[in-house]
Length: 402
Image (cartoon, rainbow, N blue to C red; front, side, top):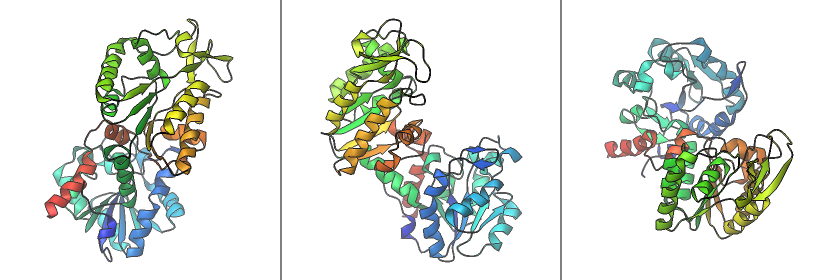
């Protein structure tokens, strides 16, 4: 994949349209997790040092194509200033007179935050007229919103066909990490996939078994695979109607030389709840009146031994009900093993999607993985092997320029 970075441009005096993902979690109008904001700072710092006028574009929530005060981005200006250390001016629309006036008043190095893109139906429809109105506001388009790259919207795909285009530093780091983890990895490669249901990750699993050496399964989906092999799972979460799909994936894995690793033991309870009485059973001995809620210590030991032979690991999804203690022990134990091996320099570890970030934060290892993506849907679609419109547009813009 060929695309330009912001390092490839002389941006002094230019107006840069920076597509960010500021769809951050909030409570009562206050940002409760600033990770997405903080990760944009390297790009903002680079643009400011270059002397660019920075115009930030983003969506927030689902306002259904019309202005809605509940989804206004105006409350974010103080948070951006606190994180980025730069004055932020708010424009009350993302196109039209108010947007042009806010940008005109900005000085080089200053930031203009424009109103929610989704206040206009043209954003999600990737409408050519709306896209041209956005493009008219700037000289260069920079996409730093990988987490929105699976959407072919005006601000994620359309703009790349109208302006000189570059990936921001966050987008560049994300694409580099993902390429190194699955497209051109150092082998052997292990993928760890957890979660409740295989029905939500069928495409992911079919793609992974063709690309990795070991596929470690946890959570409820591991029960479905074990059931598909003729095992008993007690009262555990299990998609029995997906047994045939599980067998198809196992057959595909055999043909591709991928070893599917199921839990060796499970932590089981009769009545689920915080600190519920529990016991560890071998996977093939789960009592009929109990349900499994976590992987056991033998599973962590066995997977860690395989990990020691690997060069790359890709992680998506928890191995148990990590939100309720002590049933986060399995996820925590394996996450710390990955982090320790990463620290020793022999393992590239990349994680993301769904509850993965929360699970790794709970384990206290986010900063110790090689890369942790905050993208949800985009990360999963990349794991499925699907082309992402926002990423493809970066390459397409280079072909157009050529």
